[in-house]
Length: 85
Image (cartoon, rainbow, N blue to C red; front, side, top):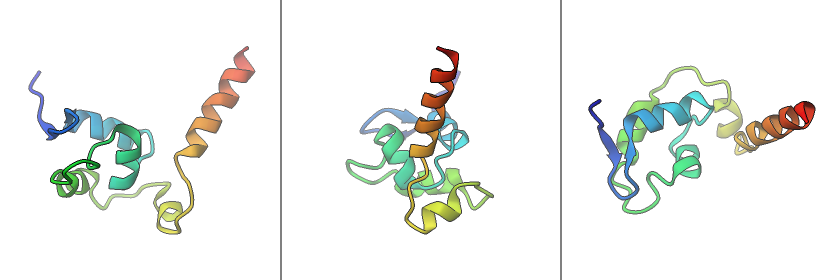
């Protein structure tokens, strides 16, 4: 498998960025919160933006309003785990 690194500072690959996006991260800031990519030298931020594109994102509207969007994922997963236990 050929790994294409987006963030050399933290060793984050294109595939990892795409996985975080699939989990709901719609902006470079949310990607940074998920894996630190873009938080050191910043040279990868434009590449992250390109990978995220301008496609539909169910949480983009909340992000543009400055509302938390990824905390909902953690809460939902915690609720799911509580239901199983």
